[in-house]
Length: 441
Image (cartoon, rainbow, N blue to C red; front, side, top):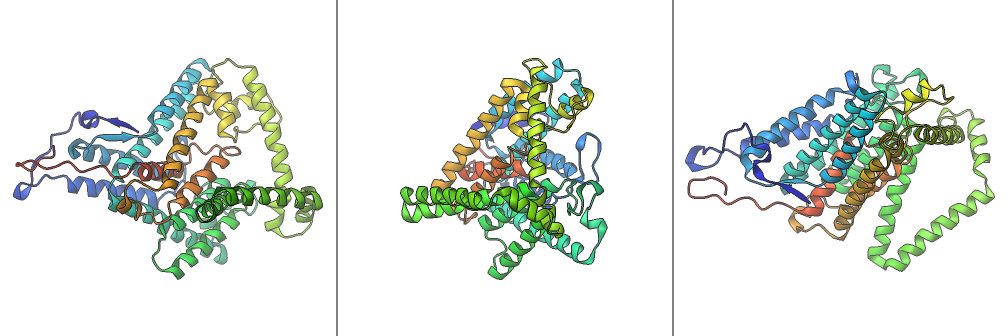
């Protein structure tokens, strides 16, 4: 993991001063920073009303978190960890070059700035969560707050409170709450399920079961087929890891192969087209808007892939520039003008081969850390704060799958998840010893 010198963020700040009884005034800055970070985690769903440049209300808290982390880092005496700086730097370089060479440089450069802000926020989380208490606080803040938000949405749906349901005409009756997009909403609810599983928060079993129910209900209300795939991918990983730990690798592989064969047989006996037709004709809005529209969604994504590849072939090797796919497809009058809806495809089309390298490096970096977490975090006391770390790995795997049909790289909670996995994989940082004057050394 990349470490930066303690002075990297200390320019412009005073050196540590001692407080009463010769103790350094470090804890207050750290506590405030962790408190603001926890509030930012709690407010993750607050994405609308949107502001300029796709900003949202929660971004104000993200920026405040960065400021408080800088203040803390300038006095902590600890080296800063930056686990994902290399892959993001490659992606930023690719995006900058593509933006400067494109016909829409400002749009591309804005996306690059967003990349850097998300990396900075992820880095701030990694450094603030390096103590067991902070890690526990952040994990539980996510788990418990997501259940509360889900409770608000479920209540709104039962009482038909349209201001909270977030229904938009273009999305039918899909409930998106304050996320602004049904697939973003569905992904958040599913990933939060895995976070509740990982943290075992709330403490009481019956409360967690209520939480699972509310989060699952909210996920169903989003009517997101992609979120259903994410849920199956994450649950499948948890089951396979459990079989591997209890019965060995051979049995885990056998289970996986059996599941794949069973799915293939079922699809042969009952073709997916038959299921889709039955769902469309059922008259049940939930079935119509999920299974019933799956064939149309697949066809649209296929058309979009063809158009995006055609767009890349007509542009320079550097790519068309970040966040320009939809605008260019509209400009060139393609029949299905949308964003790429695929992180891996978007990396190639918008940032060129160098952008693909950046995404691949990020995936491998996250996978390597996830493997370390599955083997067991370095510190037992540290690991105890996340009782079931496989839940976080399952959530990360689900987001990796989602990247094939959404653009999840700008999902704010993805970078929160990446940070928690990196912290678990590295363990706590030893605190600096205090000298006779009370200063860290």
